[in-house]
Length: 102
Image (tube, rainbow, N blue to C red; front, side):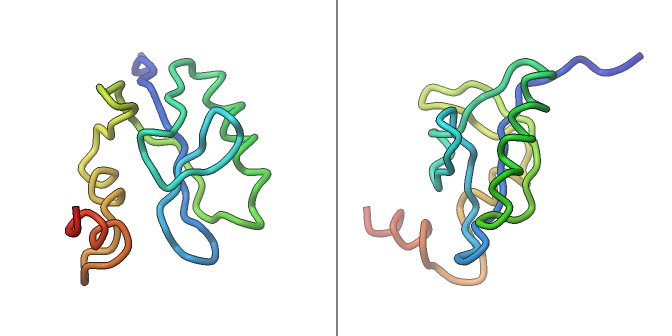
């Protein structure tokens, strides 16, 4: 018996800068997870993934990942995605540096 569908977001990496990015409901990309489109229908998830893949000249590694609704937008349900959203772990830069200065 197949597993029930769980909500998804679409994620990838920016081709030039390497940042983790998220597909939004306006067919654009954002570096902020809370701006990602939370997709709750399996067929819609596949259609949205096809739409995101049209932007292959700007992004790489596009895929669907599990998420859940949170107070400020989608939240990852898997450690890997939670880790990816904070940026590289080898030194503070980008998102990590900005968070340290707040």
